[in-house]
Amino acid sequence: MLVSPFSPVPPTPEELLLWHGEFHIRAVEMAADEHPGWLLSLAELNLRLARLGKPAWTLVSPSQNSVNSGRRRWLQISQATTFTAAVSPTASPAGTNLTIGLDASRCYLCGACVKICPQQAIALTENELTLDPLHCNGCKACENVCFPRAIAVQPAVSAVPINYAVFRVTCSSCQQVFASWRENADRCHICQRHSHGMREA
Image 1 (cartoon, rainbow, N blue to C red):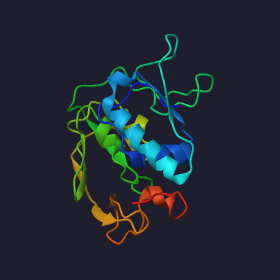
Image 2: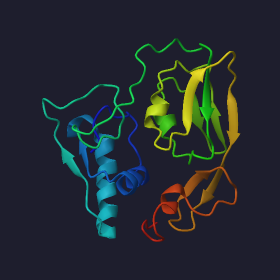
Image 3: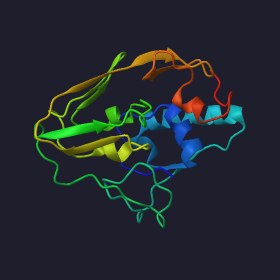
């Protein structure tokens, strides 16, 4: 089950499908009237799951005694087995010497780090991924939301923005346009993790 805190920018149905298949998420615990964007994504997800004959996600009302650390990972399995990857409460002012390291072999350009970064130190455009440590305050929100553990914020003697070339290509399986490290990429990161035809265009 996913629990708060939630990003103000809701995930795409494609991201929720990835969590559904890879992490077996089946519910979201949140107050429905506080997150309308998430509700729309959840509704679209359940329509797609219905077409695929997969179990739908449910919406769970927050309980008064539910644990909400305020800096907990988005992904929660249960309160009994939950693990934390807390964002540092002693985040430094932006501009402190930090580096935002990226392992491109792990990163599939899902954009979650871009959406969660409160300092906008990470940007993904049509043809470029930019990591700007000069705007980073070391909160490590990007690390906490990165499922493949592709990004890391660390101290550095000096820091300069780094730009990575990315390409917009069309997935041969679902026909969706996606960001890729390779111009000749054939399938998006979601379709690569599922059998052909799980997602329909």
